Image (cartoon, rainbow, N blue to C red; front, side, top):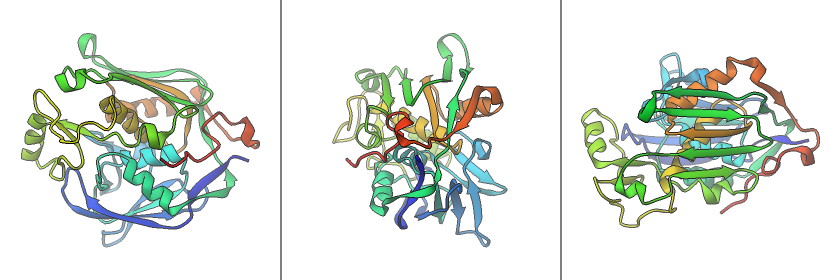
Length: 307
């Protein structure tokens, strides 16, 4: 049986929120089979659980935010991406503020935390959402078009193309295809950092955003070049970060996908619209398990190797 996964023990981190600048403590704890991934605001007078789901997403400006009533958690996508990349099904995320810490701006710190806690197989079948029909959403038209698509595929493959028209971005790879069956998430995707432009950062800070951002947790560019003294981690780090974000946004659906995702200039909003469009079409997917691990698609049966 291809089994569900959780952590062997708890693990903790302390950091600041990218937009809030607030200090935040994060504790990742094991959870029972079929729990899913549940964020818990432990700083509130009465702790509030926020299970991840496509319907729990209430804001997609600059990040993915999930809510339950008045309780919110912002910027969940990097941690969710690490969980998707390592195949974590069940997890409690205790958090002491309303934003997940940005740490180094990528998912690599979360990968390290999860792997250091150890990954435990559970006595319950891992459930996948398998695409049966193509689902697509788009926004804009002509030169402003953005789109995202899920198609049937025996495995999990993501393809993303960006178009920023900026000298520093244009000199790097604009399109990446990552297949869980052939690549290694921790090595190939997880280290790609979030990025921004100085002109946008100044505007965001004036509006109380990006208060925790800097050269130690983001790629920052002026009108011409990357300002980070150590340069890029990958030749195509910008588009790889979009793959990282997409993996996190899509895993918010609550189960791993067996599908091919492709996108052009998509973001958090369109990724969530894609999930909602999928769930609104019951004929477009089914839920599958694998009693025999050897029958599972490549890359699905084993936890992704360390660095």
